[in-house]
Length: 342
Image (cartoon, rainbow, N blue to C red; front, side, top):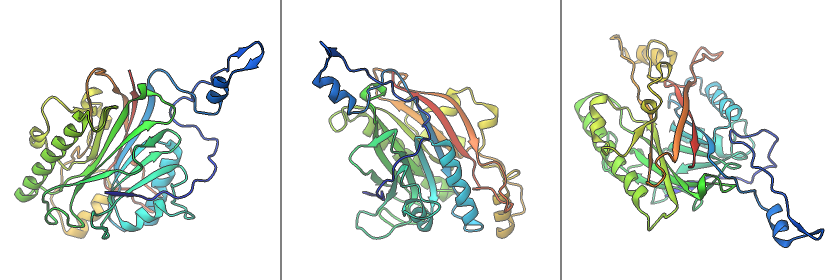
């Protein structure tokens, strides 16, 4: 289970979302009298036709505590500026999760977003790790809170351990009935890191488990008949030789769908990222580390509308240095703009 830390919302400002504002419906009149149906339509959100523009961001924000406040401030400022409809965060510490969800603080995003934070099934405290943000004025969360799928084992321990890696998933639907009234499954995860053989084995198992789990959820028409597509994004930490663990032919890599844009590849770049360089000095690592495309975005559709979720462009964010001399994270964030709906 996952606890949704959502506080009372303040009145929303004038800033628009990435999606176009829904067209206003004109009430029909009969002999100058407004019909009851027109009155009902005026009091409810206008239903949109055609695809919906959707902005998505995924980012491992780095558990490292150095210059945390300035880095958190920059992260929140970027989210407020870009107003992505969906945000996946990884390596979120308990303190940073509280800052995002507790009202009154400068980092609070609960007015604009549903802030979805993992909770252990037993109710005991866990490291949040994966936090999902859903823009309130764009999307409704189905069921009010997501579910957590715990991987069988990992670097930390066995299933159910507080720090064990997990997959957090939740369904959403547009607030105005866009995208053909279909739902979207959001799957946020973070797999084991490291290149040693045991890390590699754990990560392969987790990747295989994640792929099977989300495809099973996507294909389950009895539990979610309106589900049309999914996004799985995360810091996978994978190497290319491990990709065979994903379900063949079901998941599409957004980077590949867009023709592998040259400036949007590697998200972990030791030669350019100051945070990684500081960590290497701290750990006494002298060998040069290669760049990796650890952070990836995958999409899949149930069928019928094969282009239900179409990426239009992507970019990497967080590459600018902050005044403190650090970056927001040791990873670049990945932002994708989609068209959703047939």
